[in-house]
Structure formats: structure tokens, C-alpha cells
Image 1: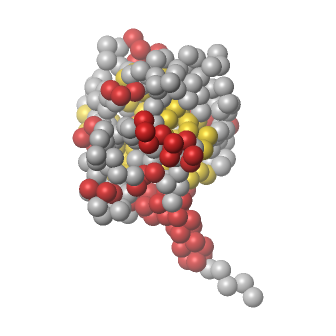
Image 2 (image 1 turned 120 degrees about the vertical axis):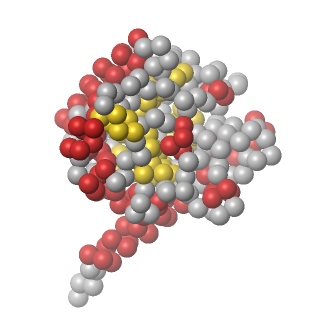
Length: 279
């Protein structure tokens, strides 16, 4: 007798999502997008990256030959495909609640020669996590290339989103703690079509890109209603683009509606990443 109902299946999915995000701190949906769609995303990112490099302050350095660029969502042809993907929506609703807000759209580009980063998290742990043991933000990633060992893949230390760094640097663990992260280290090797979600508080690092290729990665930042990461970003959409979106999409955008898109003031600098990791 079949006893699994659609409601039971949905609850099982929520349990798996919560177990993964609250456990390892990272989960993935393999083959979420078709290769042709990802190829288009890669083309758009390449154009935006070249434009950003010509604009004063258009990029943020995250280490030698490693850049971050925050973008205007409507400059990506497939932005609505990303934010309406059923798995992404399910993850946001499960972890952040029904009133989640999209606060960031951008991409990382570790180019040839990018060095290994120190272990870090992307921002200090908020009280909701340190005291309340609740995660109120997520980062989603989409690779535009098949990641290989020599392209500087991400390494992550599962379960460390709960680590309390309040005794020192709030984002960078002290070197004497590195053994903990080395022992837990997992190297992530996503391929074209994969979509991942992680807590940006989970301790991680980019590794050295010793290939002759760049490894562009799209980034989407999403907050629960009580999170404040929107303060670090400047999500903008034009009035025409905003009104073209379905209401169920608009309600999740924490953005400024403008007449003309303004240059993004890159504000989420992470000073500790400007040099490579210590040997």
C-alpha cells in the first residue's frame, strides 16, 4: 500500500533541507538548470565583468586575481528563472520562512593565479545564530563551468556555521584553530547545471587557481525578515522591469525601484581576503 502523500513528500523535503543546512551547512540540487541556460548565464556574466573592470570601483578584490561584482538583476536574461526555481523557493521557505527577501545578486571570478584564501565566513555571526541557534540568511551559487581540481574549487568545513569566533576576529578563525577546519574539509566540485545553497557563516575558503581558466560563480543572497544583510548591498531594478515581474516575485525583492540603473557601489568588502592565506 502506497502511503506517501504529496504533503508527506513536501515535509520530507523540508526535513532534508533543514538537516543539510543546519547540519553540514551546504546542500545542492544537481542538474537544476540545462547546460544551454547556464551557457547564457556565463555569457552575461562575462559581459558584466568586463564592464565592471572598466568602471572605477566596479569590482571588489577578494585576493590576488579574485574578484566579486554585485550586479543589477535585470542585466541577467535568466534572473527570474533563478529566483523562481522550485528547489530554491522551497529552500528559502523552509529555512527563512515565507517572507524571505532577496538582497544580493552578483558573481565571484577566481581567475588564473588566484591564491588560496584563509579560512573565513562571509560576515560575522548575528545574535540570532550565536544565541538563538537559528540561521537567517542563505547564499545560493551557480557555477558557469565544470569545476576541476586545478581551478581553485571551494573548500568548506561542514558544521562550522555554529562556531563562536567572538573571542577574536569575527570572520577569520585564528590559525591555531585551523586543524579543526582541515580535519573537516570537503572540496566542492560542482558542474554546469548545479545549484547549491549554503550558510555564508559556514567556514570556507577558495583554493588556488593554477589553471589557465577563470571559474565564474553566480551568487544570490537571501535573508529572513529579521536579517540585515541588505544593508551591505544595493539591489536595484527599473520601474519597467519591476512591474513586469509577477507579484509573487516582487514581494521577495528587497530592492530600490529606480528610473535609470545607477552604478552599484560595491560595499561588501572583506579586507582579510586581500592577501593569500598564510603558509
